[in-house]
Image (cartoon, rainbow, N blue to C red; front, side, top):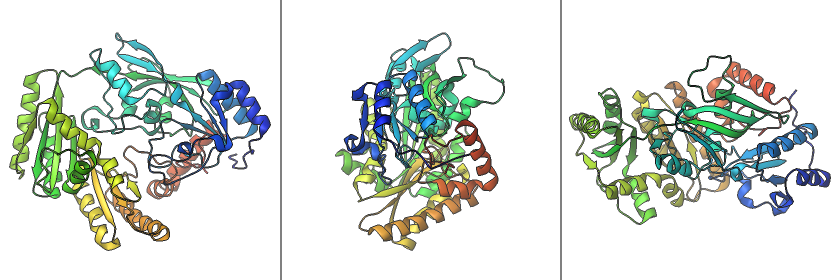
Length: 469
């Protein structure tokens, strides 16, 4: 039976936890830095009673065993780069800062796997494997996120069109269950039909089912050649409507991103550097990679011609490091640039079938006039994952909350009508729980709660998130 009547942490609890982990890695009460009370958007603020920085699976297991026995809630956390309150301790209790477990444990070049702890940063993984001629394809925009956080949200990123998402590259996991048991799911094998896929349940569970303490990632050989196309269009509709034509061509792009002029201008101001072109209302950014120059040339020529036939104003080929850096620096800065332009914001991380991307973006933009609020968007046109931001600007607290709720109700409602889902890659956390329940319905939410109860019968692991009480 799930129970939210949690034990209040006292001195005896702190003393015990300091006997499990060294005293300097157990921080209590007001000594906990405020950064641990919120995530990147800072829309939800709750303080943990105690912060623990474990350095081993054994320490995590000891903490979880004690928390289970004492009925204390536990919130796992990586770098806190999330956008939906997933790592915010809604009920206080213990926070596990997993970023200190950051060792790369093994590179197995025969099996093309990398075994590592959850605190390793995405940017560290990329550098480590690419220096050795290998490739980890998932490419979320926040490169300082931990791999544990990526696993927890099933992060996707820009290369998902061709390569898929985090779940497709997790071969095995070591996790600590709610009662402190250490178990392993999956491994280095390529195929596995041995019962339920527990590993795949953990990926995307946002710390509500278990604490990830080790992961085995699948790698690929590093593509030797890369090239990007920046394609201006007269309007967003013509840009987005070209995407299915590109995807159906002979070579699938690594990434297909869409962007609008106002977001590019915000990024230019934020970075203090110019984008290669900012004169058009809408752009597609296409990237191709492959094992040979001939493969890349064939792919980009086909895509360029498809775009021009569909009304593109031009095609800029980005085949130099300087131009690539200019384009991708701007693309990587979009979120921070939008954030810097307003007093507060929240995100609709909706995903819709590709054919409805243009229709949904038009609908979202129309809400600006209806609700007198600025809305900015960019996203992964190739897989239908859209990042749409409602900006607070000068709205007071009560008006902002009411307006945001009405705008999000309209956007998530329209996504359901188009056969979409609440989140493409940023997860549900605390902020999107209600929208998930509306989207999935009672039967599926009931099944999800049954899974949660099987893994965590006392509801101590990251309670208040996804579908838990």
